[in-house]
Amino acid sequence: HSPPWVWHTDSWKSMSWAGGHGHVYDACWNPEGNVLLLALEKAAPLVALHFTLGPPSLDAQLLPVDLPMPAADGDGAPSPPSVRSLAWDSTGERLAVATAGGRVVLLSSRLDPVLSLSLVGAVEGPRASSLGSEAERHAAPRVALHSQRAGARTSRRTLAAAF
Image 1 (cartoon, rainbow, N blue to C red):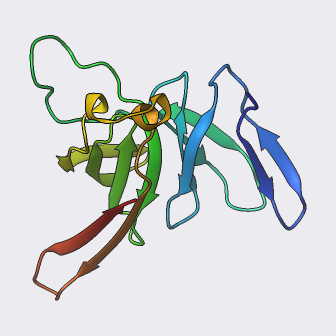
Image 2 (cartoon, rainbow, N blue to C red):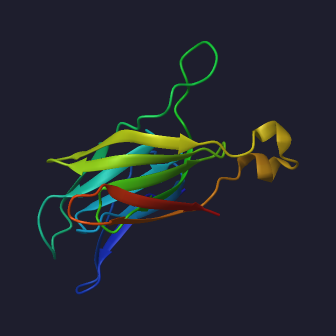
Image 3 (cartoon, helix red, strand yellow):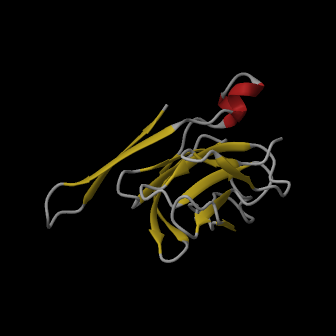
């Protein structure tokens, strides 16, 4: 599998980050464009490329991101989820994550100075045993987010779509 690459399109300079991360399942930029969040096959479920200088610099630090998940049913510690899809809302305050098992998790995100996430809520998709083919059992929904404030003193409304 090829490592993640980033290009600066004014100069077409590029940088890659090798390290045995495996396949990149999905990636998304935060609204400010200074963090690229990656869902990887072999490393931590999520890593963030924090770009330390403004454009045209490609100087960045690759840091693991702690992914809070809802408590698992049953005994034992849950295994790290296999993240397949990511979407930030336009404010950068909410992040939706879809896992290979069909779970869609809504997280609050904060960048101070590195990315941290806290759990807002989650919904379960169909259980793997109810799906037919091997491909369906490993499929995950794609996610999209829209977030807005209804008024100056009201709470944030976030719409999450999975498809």
